[in-house]
Image (cartoon, rainbow, N blue to C red; front, side, top):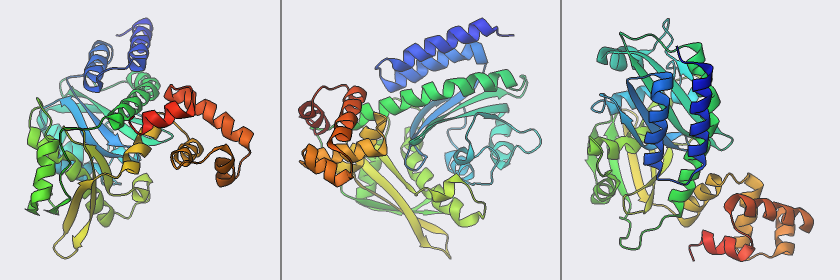
Length: 350
């Protein structure tokens, strides 16, 4: 039995770690090692999502289901699947009465007895998920475990959001992103056809040093395609139905791409997935959200980048010059600059 004091010490250490600028992968491994003795789990997975769609783009983990992501991701996008990530607002353990196909067909046969899913959400969307698993010969997660992770979730979401802002600031000077490419996937997420541009993108998405790198590179493709298939086969109304089949991804070179999918042939149940270079505003928006700027604050920043002064920003946003200056002060505090020139220079990479 873990004491209340041990859980509080763990929370304090994770809170301090989450505030520090760090390599996101190293930071997540450190957080896992702090959680392991307090919560207790055998396997784990930490996918990171594009907050605009809630679709996973990358991730790390220690588990033994690497060979099965296509089927796993297809089920995770089904809005009526118990524990589907898009429907989760709070941490949730496996429902013994209705575990769902995802657990019965895939996780259970691997010897996983319970899974605690922790969605990492804030007002901007879903930034990722922390999946903790226990073996079938272990005790299920307790209400205390769920409450503890529920309290930690905002800290973990904020840390993931800040790492997204840092990633969006990165640029590649050595390579040019590939041209747009297309893949055709069937309803089992098998690739039926692909263009040279798509294959070039996949080569850049290969993560260095991770097991099953090819599967990891395909994961965002699977996720985006799964959204299209899932929404075509469910009638349930939930959060996921209003989200696009679209995700922003960052290649190993630092280049950013946009992955989008749409039905190709309903009769053959095929989906076309396109990968193209991201426009500047796509990455800028992710960076501004990463700094936790509100919609109004992001509108103001975009007006400044267009060359507007205070008067023109005031007229454009239908607010007073005094309100514009108040917004600017809040933006400076969040971004860590002192003047408009510093803000613009930082955002355009000068």
